[in-house]
Image (cartoon, rainbow, N blue to C red; front, side, top):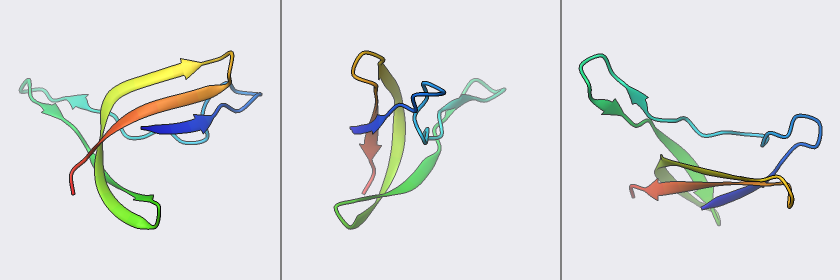
Length: 67
């Protein structure tokens, strides 16, 4: 999980991960991206789970770590 603060002017996080896309043939394409956690580079995918907590001004996304 990644938690980021929401920008007070836009109510959006400073970064949003790439999301899955439905292809014309019906398959779902889930992009992979690199992220660094505690100095370690990981290959990840977003699980299309995102939570906005406007009261606490937080944005939380859930990743799948591939390696």
